[in-house]
Length: 312
Image (tube, rainbow, N blue to C red; front, side):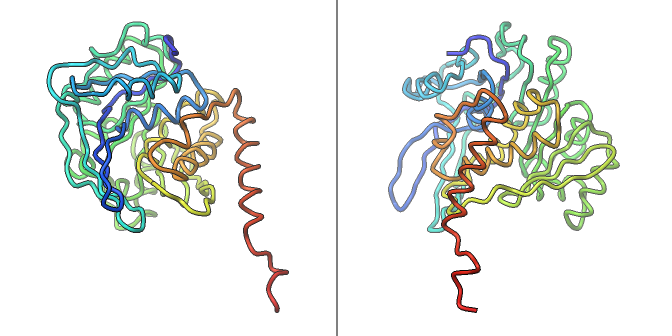
């Protein structure tokens, strides 16, 4: 288990009640978990979160087996955060219910002192006021690169607070719908133009299977997604992108290369349920990951029909 992580993710660790084809099961979930699973592909990683007494020891074991430090996960009285998720016939997730429970008061005081030596912190979706307090704490107590993402509910309700956070963090990640809502734009093009003019360091806009856009103060760059033949589960792919972006950005120092790499990690996460595709993956270098993705895409390519196979 990594006791001195390079990357720390802060946010909800949950018990997910998942229904697929009428069958209901419990599984480990939460944005902090998905982003940590993705970050550990390239770096030693730890999680900061709060859970209840009902949190299964087997869930903590899943994290430790993946070489993710659980030193920052506090077990408190009461119940854990949970999400009730139902998947339809097309594999799309529908969130039926959630309760934050023990996760409601996650804060900067939960960060172990040893974690403050980490090179990067990712703050998963939470109330922007809470995120702001964590950012302020990290700026006073560490020299780390700080990234943050949010979700549509907060983009609708806390626009001003999120726009202020945009210039306080090093990396601010949102999806295309959130960008349009946050910028009061009519379409994505308008949102990207407004984002470029808004005070920020790096803003990354994810486009699902289509890729991502890096908005810097000087230019806007689009990076296509990595093709997958049959995506299975898109849950947590945005969090996986954010975690792997931070890890690869720290490793390379290149905002554009990090987007390309994070596209690959997020697409890989969608190839099976939960975070199972990422759990066993660790790469000693960015090049090793790129070789893995290139080889994998080559195998997928062989399944495609070439032009010569058609009678034209």
